[in-house]
View 1 (cartoon, rainbow over the protein chains, first blue to last red):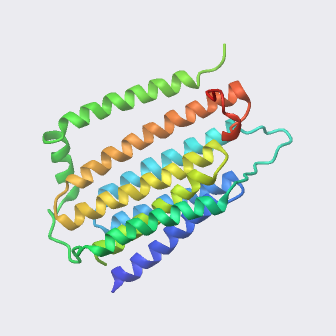
View 2 (view 1 turned 90 degrees about the vertical axis):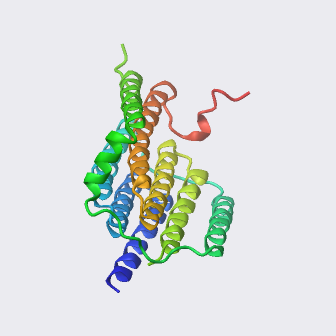
Length: 163
Length: 99
């Protein structure tokens, strides 16, 4: 009962803020609505009893990505004279495409019988995840570290000051 | 709430992000739509992981979040560099590769 209330309120927050992200005229407002959507997703992770992932989501997404997007908006905006405004074209075609794809996916989801009860999971998720990452998934973990290093170097190189 | 509810929620958010990618003209707006789509995929992963009892999906989600953060940083660095060169971020005007 409590879970239903939490799920529906989180669903309303998530879908509403996602709509506000894509429909907002002001790009800055879009980023703020995105922060709310990402926090809503962290709430969904909490509902799914993945508390470590909720914390990671809040730290990296709602904290990190929103910050760098705000900085990118500040850097790429002609602050003299031009208002931060956002126009979109062909809203109808985009709406048709996305409604078609969502309809297809929802049709596929509702056709099969999907589980409605949760199987018991290991008690401490953080410990289980840590052990998994460092034993079974150690190779993807190291490759991920290499990838993030390459991405960081690339981003710093791209955005270096002009000289 | 069963697995179906979480999957339908993720599909909705994915569709909304897709709508944003298709209609937005500002490149940073397109990147925001891509972030929404990745978020929906993460919800999917965690929901399937929870309802199948194994935590492999959650490890995958951690990797996906880290990769998404790297991709967002790289994409925004490219946008900043493009803005320096072309003085615009409107996707209509970024047509250097056009034939």
